[in-house]
Image (cartoon, rainbow, N blue to C red; front, side, top):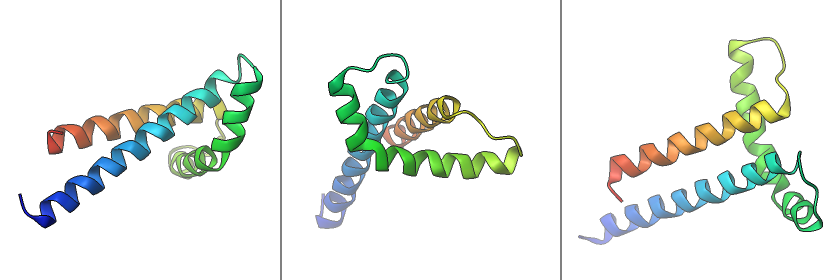
Length: 96
């Protein structure tokens, strides 16, 4: 495999890592509605900008389908499902 192929696979690998981290942070935000230990609050505050970025894009997309606003828990669940399908889609395309 040449240089271009290796660069492409490395970029896809970094994208998969980004999706995994964003999925984990979204999951922890959802769990933090039920439990509030100190370590979970610390992780949520550090991952807040990334999860807020994701929920902002999802809310913009949901406004095209409905004029109603959705609770944050519903948006986070839709975000987790979206990230999961994106990961499965990328893995099946590139057989990594």
